Length: 374
Image 1 (tube, rainbow, N blue to C red):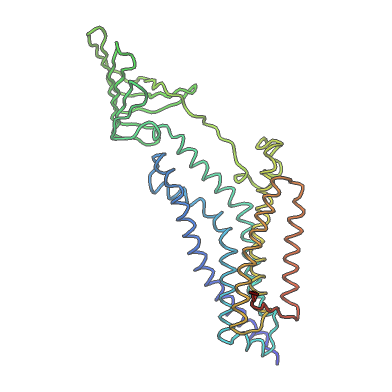
Image 2 (tube, rainbow, N blue to C red; image 1 turned 90 degrees about the vertical axis):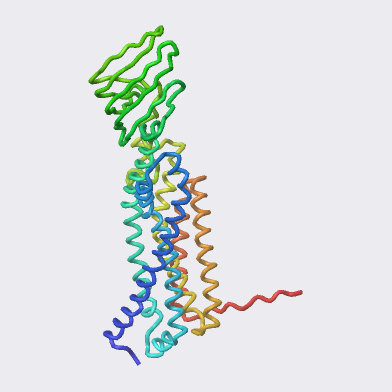
């Protein structure tokens, strides 16, 4: 008995709908957990750099593309296992095979989704992630080097250096308002400055405040002098941080990594790290296909019953973890010897071909319980 092509499309849509729905839920949950863990990890960064909470949240959202590439293969693996195992439990898969559907036809929906997500992951790793990485590091760098945030907190008396105290009512983007400065760095000539507003500037590695509309009171030999000004520059006596940062491998686009040495991003010593990042971007999306094939092998290469399938599912989970650990070891190996990169791709292609052949072979795989001898 052979199904009509229209019926095959209906079954394909039925399986695809379940996989996509499950993938949306599982990946959203895992992404939320991963994002929250990043927020917890970076809380000290939030406190130390005096960053606003919502600004901090916006900054951490820039990590989502990288997290999504890591999470999607695991989520897809779990969903494919769950959906097809449920089809086995409900006898739907047995009925589909009984009416003439082959393993190739039944596995096609999952593999099509895996290929689609692989292509999407390639787009993210090669084009989207570098853009977001640049935004994230620029955000973090600006926060670390925001002079007003680091030196002056509004509504508080801030001791910038010994003998120099500043109070400001408002502070935003290096622009200060309602400023009070008590300067006793020269004990014999203490000075008090009031100003309506000021702008923090850094020139020649020195930080100063360009004050507007204010007054100065200075004491010398027991005598006080007063004066007003429209513009006045107060040197804070603080050395500014370096305003230039070097790009990391994760911020570079595909061809920028290839020519990192020629473009000045890397030297002979650091270039292997850039190449590891390149190979990582090319390998990670393929996890979607590999993990999906592992899940399908676990389902279809065992007798379609609950007992056998549960054993193969456990084997699938350990296989997925084993493959993940293998690639971590291979990427670490590339850091030692970058000329071994063909080995990584040969192993990747070999794993895909092997799983594909096992999936569509006529043999089943049985995993017997191990009995330990006393």
